Length: 245
Ligand code: UDP
Image (cartoon, protein in one colour):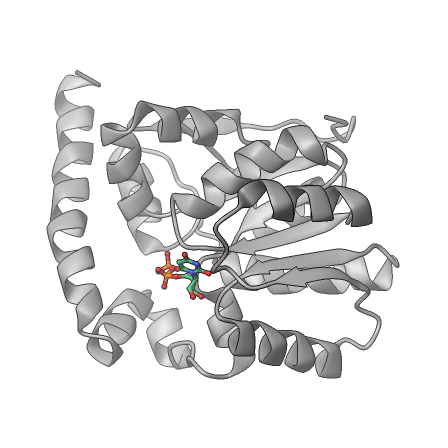
C-alpha cells in the first residue's frame, strides 16, 4: 500500500487492537493518500474481536483504524491515552467531498435497495461532482460476483454498509481484488444519508450520548448495547490493572 511519505501512523493499543491517534483532519489527509482498509472501531467490535481472532486480525491488518464513538475514546482514556473520537459517518461524508472534488470515483455497497438509491440521490444533490462508479444493495449471496464487478469498475473509494463484522470481512477480501482502492465499513450510514434514519440531534452529539438516542429510537439496540458497554469498560479496567491476560 502506498503510504503518504510525510505522515506516519502513531497507534495505541486497546484490548490487543491497534488504533490510530490522528485528529479528523490528519486522518482524512492520511486516508486520501493510502489504499486499503479503514475500520471505524466501536466497543461492540472490540468485544467481538476478543472472541473472534480472525476479526481481530482483520482490524490489526487495516491501514487505518479510527476510534468511532465515545466508548473507544473512554476506553483509551482509562488506559491513559488522550485520543479524540472521530465519528465514522462524519469522516465518511468528508471523504466523499474530498474524492468527488478530486474527480476520483466512488462505489457504494450495502443497505436495502431503496435506501441505497435514496442515499446516493441525496449525496449527489449535495455534492454534484460525485462520480458513482458502482452501487449494489447489501442483500447479496455471492461476494465473488460483487467483487468481480468492483474489479471491473476499479473505484478509488468504496463504502461498505453491511454491519459489522460482515463489512470488515468483505473489505478484507476485496483488498486483494482491488488493491488500489480505499475501503471503509460504514454500518448504518447509508440509512442516515437516505434520510430514513435521523442522526441524533446536535445536543446528543455534543454530550457524546448519540448511542443513547439511537437506543431510545430503536429499543432493539438495547439488547445489543447493554451487555456490551459495561463488559467493555470492565475489560478495559482489567487491562489497566493487570495488563492483557
Ligand atoms: N445490511 C446489509 N446487509 C446485511 C445486513 C445489514 O446491507 O446482510 C445493512 C443494513 O441494511 C444497514 C447496515 O447494514 O443499512 C448497517 O446495519 P446495522 O444497523 O446493523 O449497523 P451498525 O449498527 O453496525 O452501524
